[in-house]
Picture 1 (tube, rainbow, N blue to C red):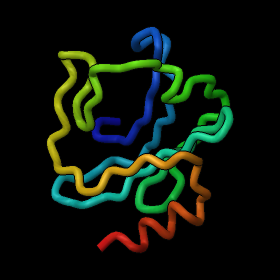
Picture 2: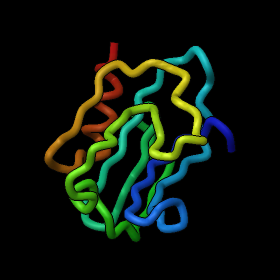
Picture 3: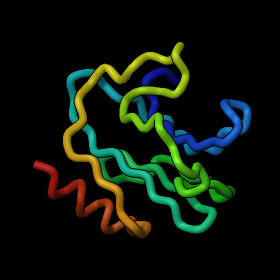
Length: 111
């Protein structure tokens, strides 16, 4: 659905995307805590500390992309996609996959 949360990674454009999609629609004017974890071949997508999507067949991870130059938050690699109409506060990358309880704890500590 429009405004639903999605994580995707690809080496071959849209047809080759590996993704985790959720059915949770985000509402304008509301802050959300979004998180993605990737452990082995399992990616999980969270909104406000609750898992809303899973893909157990992931074969790509960020290091699969190699050296990149188009690294954006809220903007797509594809020019026809709209920019994020919102604000980002606090972006983190960890060197390991966080557990569900760690994701929940992060959400609970958001002011």
